Every structure is written in C-alpha cells, then in structure tokens.
Image (cartoon, rainbow, N blue to C red; front, side, top):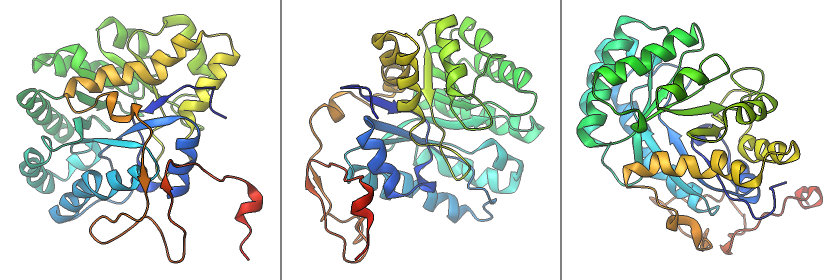
Length: 313
C-alpha cells in the first residue's frame, strides 16, 4: 500500500487508543516515526495520579511498544484544553508538567489551546505557552471544532503575545477556512485526515495544489474515535495518483514534520535510518508486547498480513 520506498512521519496520533495490529500495519505502510500528543481520554480524569501515570506511559510503555514494531515514538506533553476547565485539577497538572517536558523523547508542549474558548482554557493555554518558551520547546496547538476560525486566530495571537515565534508553533486541525491565516502568520499548518470531520484526503490534495508544501503537515490524529492510523500513507498515495510530485508529497508527509518538531533537539532522522533491530523477547517493566503463546519477532520486523495466516487452529 505504501508508495514505493517512501518514508512517513505521523506527527499526531494517539496510540494509547490503538492496538499492536495498528503498529504492524503502520510499519508496513512506511511510517517510520510518530508523535503522540497528550490528550483527553474520552472520560475526564479526576485525580492527579492518573495524569502522572498517563504521561509516564507515553514516555515508557508506549515508546517501548512502538519500538517492538520498528517505529520511533516521540510525544508532546501538556494539559489538554478540555481538561483545563477543571481548575482545581489543572493547577496540580501545571505543577507536574515541568517534571516531564524535558525528558528524553518529548518534542513539544501539546496538544494545548482552546476547545470551548473558556476563561479557564485561556488561562492554562497561556501558562503552558510560558512553559514552552522557558524550556525552548515547540508548541503543538489544538484548534477548536466549534468557531474554528476565531479560535485559530486567537490561538496564534495569544502565542505571539507570549513571545513565541511562529516557527516554533504547529497549529493543528486546520481546514480551508484557516489555512491562509496560519500560513500568512508564519506558523506551521498541520491538517488532520479524519473520517467524517476535520479534513478529508481529497480535500488535502486540493490544499497542497493551492498552497504548495511550505510549512504544511499531514497527520491522522487517530484515536479512540472513528479514525484511521494509515491516513498519512493513504493521503500520500492519493497525492501521487492526482499528480503531485513525489518530492512535494515527501515534504508534507515527512520532512516538514521532522523540521518542525526537530527544533526540540529530540528528534533526528538518524534515529530511524538504520533498519530497526526488533527483539520482541525484550520486556518493559517485566511486560512484553506479546500475549500468551505468541512467537516473538527477532530481527527486522516484517508483517504477515495475509488473511490465511489469521486462521486460528
């Protein structure tokens, strides 16, 4: 399914919600690296300990799990806008964030920004911008589903107020309504290919045809909802099919993400250019990616994605 010899980065995907089968299919499709932003789990967290365990899992178990399928895993750490509205808990999370943002593998503060654009969201967005500036990390912004254009413009304006340079800000979930403002402001414009909402891959093709490839990034944002962890390679295939040059596809599905998040100093192409030497006998805190009776892969990971091999005898 992957365009021949192409490598992809998915710079926004929530693997906590996905299975190891997804990792296998992503590796087969040419995805070499991913970034997992901190996000809302679907049910509000009620204790600070659940945030601590979640951030730890992004830096520990999930990173290990990806490596067992030959994929490099990075993350961004932040208080999601939706959960900023529980101010008592948000205050505790703000005390926790400095303990995590400078750990190995953290390539930004995110995803942060506005959801309903409340006063509380604004307060904690600003505080996290200050944190990002203090530690010199890129910022990954979630733009709201409702009143998106106003929320996107407000997000960028506030970032500028806090002295964050546009080249250090990745504005995500753009669409046709917001792309011009984002690019004109000098920010990175990320697009989420998400079934039934946000951005379709046919629309994404037209965006690239109209605006070119400078500072444009494609991601899947695949999570616990109806979503597709192969959105980046599938969109790349469609772009090639619709006549977009391979180098342009490489820019929006690989290079721009590397350039944007590589500013963290934590993400380098050399991390994945050598074939991954997978050993699924390895364990993380005494747990492996294998369930009972499964045969570990040792060496270069190759999928066996044929239906006949899924027959359980």
